[in-house]
Image 1 (tube, rainbow, N blue to C red):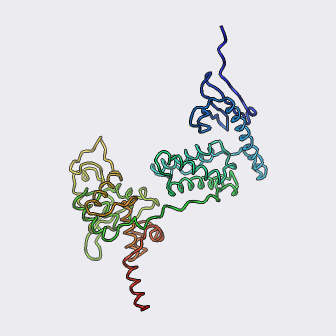
Image 2: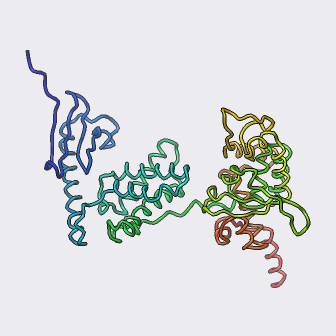
Image 3: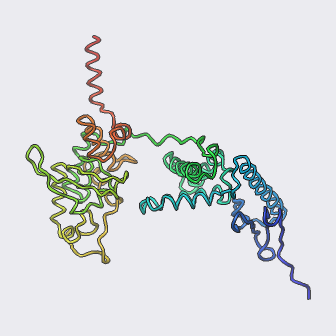
Length: 409
């Protein structure tokens, strides 16, 4: 009886140094590749080469193994030369080493949501640049090429590439990690800190994203009379304090207290939770009469009385929790209510404009009155409000031109 043929196998490079092996797991099956740097990496050759179909050609596999072994040899020799040049005889560090240490250093300071985003970007860079790649081998060109691949892959799935803001987030992440390697860990020198990587300009077509004075005047009453009271309250708080949706929707009743203004009217003031603030700083904001009315309406509902959460999801007339707990409203639902109000008030729905359009309205109006007070109220910096959120006041510009024409007549 003839012997069963053994699965094919080929190794390139020196064992324990740059050994790369390509092989079949069963005769006639797709080819796999394996190497150690520093831990074992085992992938299908299709995954490694990013091929559209399984790779079965042994000549291609043999050539790829030889090239991979040469690449690993180059990385190792480059790291050795760099270690000798800088006097650092420690073991060369890889991208996997860096991102692991980076997360250990900063993960505890991130919110749960931010932690997910950071982990996704870490996985992206480990996938595109390979975790076993030495830090000294990562160049600005490799980084920019990885971002382009990520953008192209997203375009293939969704029909549109990454926005500049998405590219910026990924580049900021990898640049921060390499700065940590230079300044804190002292694993590499400043010549490898990716300072040459330029960040793309943010998506800044924001002039159309603010609500005009006329749109705001139509939108807020519509939210009050014809939409969910929680969406109305969010909009009113945005319009008078400039705070973000995530901070607002987590508000609880014990964060409110009455405040008597100079005009004798009593309104609510809010003690903001620092953990829900983008800059991790708590602050104190005095709300408007309309925002106070909206919050008082919520305070009078059975559900808010039962749980103490102002923007709890569910029927406000039902005090019982859903599935044993009370959950803050999702931003998606609040945005749906805003879109409904836009339609009812005959306000144009602009892609990318949400409640932040009211923050831009707040910044534009409040900075004209008192820049420092506007910044304190929004728990941010006056320059941020001015550069990021303030919009042009077209009516005042037109009035300015009229006056200039009078002077030059």
